[in-house]
Structures are given as C-alpha cells and as structure tokens.
Image 1 (cartoon, rainbow, N blue to C red):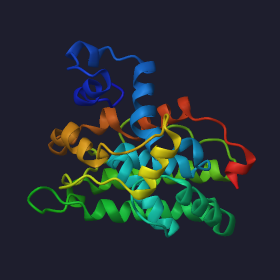
Image 2 (image 1 turned 90 degrees about the vertical axis):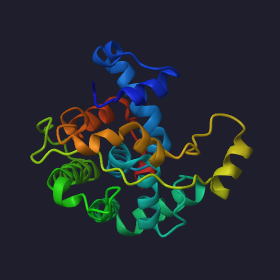
Image 3 (image 1 turned 45 degrees about the vertical axis):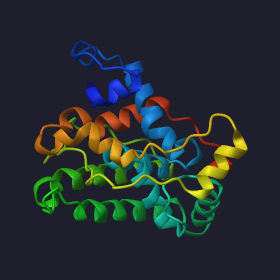
Image 4 (image 1 turned 120 degrees about the vertical axis):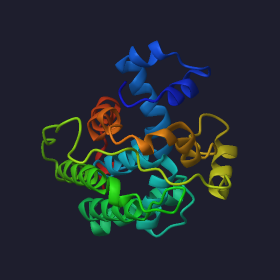
Length: 244
C-alpha cells in the first residue's frame, strides 16, 4: 500500500508487520515513513524547490545515499552521501551562478546515467528490461521539478503506472558501510536529532526490496505517482533565501 513494502513497514514499526497492516496502511503512516526514510536523509527541507523533488524521488527509487552522492557529484564536492554544511554551501553557490533549472537538468541526466549502468547479480544490465519505465519516471520528475523552479503551477499528476512500468532501481548491495568525517563531526557537535545515513540506505533498500527486481508490476504501487503525492503532503514552503 502506498508503495511501502512489508519489510519497510516492519523496520518502521520495529517488529514484523502483518499482511493486514500492509493492506490497511493509512496515508498518515505512509507519509511518516516516506518522510523519515527518504525525505529527512536527503535533507529535503534544506534544498531549493525543484531540486528537493529531484533528490527525494531519486532516493525513493534508488536509496537516499545514492541520491545525495549524485547531488554532491553535480556540486563538485566529496561524494559521501551525507548532506552537511559543505554540501549545502556548494549547492547555494551553484544555484546562484548556474540557476536551479540547470542543476535540476544536471541531476536528472546523472540519474539516467546511473540507471543505465545498473546490473543485476549476474552482471546483466537492467536498462534493457526496465529502462523505459525508469526513463519515463525521470522525465516526469524533470518536468515537475522544472515547473517548481519556474514558479509555475504543478503539472497534473499522471497515471499511477507510467508506460513501461518497472521496479525500484537498486544496485547490488555494497560490501561495506562508511561514515563520513563530516557526518561524525555534525553528530558530535549537535548531540541531538541529527539526521544521518549510517544504516547504509542502499544496502537497506536491497534487503527490503530485492524481490521486486523480478516483478515488473511493482511500480503500480511504488511509482512516481505515490512519491510525488507524498512529497506534496509533507513538503514545507521554502523561504526566499532557501530558493537563492
């Protein structure tokens, strides 16, 4: 329900989720899960409008850490998967000099390049099977994000299953989990509710969703429609300074 798998709900509840709980999952609970597992890890509230949607949806599709690393690569900073002070400063500088639209297009192009390179456990490229659905998803997010960056009205939400629907784009699980120096420093300095990604989001996504790679209908419940609807539910209005 709402694109939330049983494994994801179990992790959120801290116990095995029942089939009935998945079937009867409330919108409020689904929104909380998307916010806690995808929005907060990419520091969505700190990102400019349009850019926030790009990074958030990439995180829903491929894991928050991967999405943040793509943003950092576009900004020319260390790709550690953690949104800290240096990343935010670099982002504001890039937006001021290049503009949000340029950054949005760059992020979407990088996402496509990443998706085209994903291989399964046997080394086979998944783009041949799922590329059409992934491409449609990125195109839809690009369109929505550019509209947000232009201050235009959001495009009408499209069908639940884009043509060529496909599963989440998740790579083979990484061998190790790492914590960046910037992340450690931020956590130690704050001493309170610092959002971190030490649980290895990509590995977690693989563990939670490895079965979907063999299920082409998965996007029916976990596609761009769900991600965007939830995004609009919890997204906060950005200040003029944040839009810079």
